[in-house]
Amino acid sequence: MLILRNKFNFLIVIIFLSSCSSMNITEEKVYSEGVKTVEASSMSENINYDNKAMFANATVYFEFDKSNLTSKSIQTLKSAVNALNENSSIKISLAGHADERGTREYNLALGQRRAETVADYFVLNGISSSRITVKSYGEERPKEFGQNEESFAKNRRVEIN
Amino acid sequence: MKKLLLAIIFTNSLMSELVIEITQGTEDPFKVALVQFGGNVEISEELSQIIKGDLKRSGEFNVFDENNLLSLPSNESEIVFNDFRILNIDFLIMGKVIEDGMNISVEYQVYDIKKASKARATTVFGIPNKNRQLAHYISDGIYEEITGIKGIASTKILYVTEDKIFNLVVADADGSNEQVLLKSAEPIISPAWSPDSKKVAYVSFETGMAKVYVQDIASGRREIAIENTSQISSPAWSPDGKFLSLTMYQDGNAEIYILNLKNKNLTRLTNHYSIDTESTWSPKGSKIIFTSGRSGSPQLYEINLRKFNARPKRITFDGNYNAKGSYLPSNEGFVFVHRSDKSFQIAMKYFDENFVRPLTEAQLDESPSISPNGNVIVYATKDEGMGLLSGVTLSGAKFKLPAKKGAVREPAWSGFLR
Image (tube, rainbow over all chains, first blue to last red; front, side, top):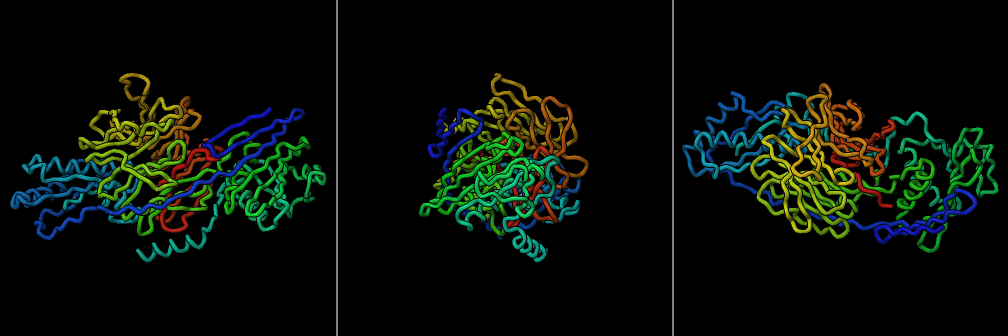
């Protein structure tokens, strides 16, 4: 019996099953394809923060797997709102982050949710949403590298710039 | 802190040259004897070392050292089956390296000791300078002959390394033959193979925001999966390669969409104010598992794509963190990240059982990826703060794939390549 299989158009396996026993006699060809390295040009925006009111720069922190604002966060955000009201030309970027525990994609979504919560707070307090951009880095850009609650707590944050 | 980190990286790079550490084997492995192949001694030694490593790493073989054998036959007529039977050896492997200019091929045979007969005779035709590939093909043939399951030594693994910059890397399943697909100053996450293993989809932050890209491995040609102002992440290929499921943040919240790769049409799959992400397809493409926070904590849900307007069905109930599920190739169950007490572990659940089977026991295990034969799960873990890859077989064998340079994470196993 002859079985001819053609996989990826490269590999041909011919199997002869001998008639008298169950022994497999086979032939195969090694297939190997090349790999090309690509370099991503970093298009990360480089905002010049110099002429921004420093008061608007702040970081707020969150509980594990949570995106609601703590009373301490609200205090911080209040002064940021004031700074934004004082200078209506300032635009802000909100970057959400998570600690390293749990899965990366869920943490990306969690970081986004945290940043959206902060954005909602600003909008509710009269800041135009056109002045706000929101993004998440999930757990990919930690501030602290330790595997302890202290470091985790510092990484669960939204940075306001 | 930085200095300490560098020291660890350096030690790792010194110690880990192609070393795959088997930390625990299966209880009743097949006992095999591999007699060094005839022909070119240098090539034969190189091949047998790789083959032995492949077989041992599967966790299912106990490979006898030549020194412990009673006889070393160089051809079939010299085999004394009793010499192997006394040692309780199940299979004997012999072979011959044949050189034809630059081309090398190997003829090998697998003998069943109990039956005192030849079980397999195979010729593998190699390609110049690809002896590792040739050896992996032989390992897979041996594995398949003895276990009845397709081997995975000739498959590949994608992963991300961080060493000042981020690299998306492809390597043989044993961690050797590393080649960089993408270098970037910004994070790369969630690599996913196309079903034909010719393309990869991944998330890159190179524009300052998460976006999904699709890259052809051989040509390096790549494109953004979908032009959109929103953050986009978590790509997963449908088994037929025609669709990508992904997570989009159009209204600020993570929702799952299905992208038709041909006409770029988008179909929304989820609609809930909580997080929905980490979609993966069932082996036949009729269902999708995803992570959702809709119950108040991340849990896994399954949605039937064949049913119009089907509601997602919750499939995990143990604990307050179950995420990143993927189906076993047999469709009998799924593998996921499970929080137990304070630690995050890799666990699995069969659809016909109502309990979770933990597979690992470290503190921060994540990103499980299942081998195409369904037998091995590779995942990311941390050792003294350093990211590295580990593996566990469903039969309980464990191994480590240490980093050669920098932190390693986000493994993704290819389909069969042989």
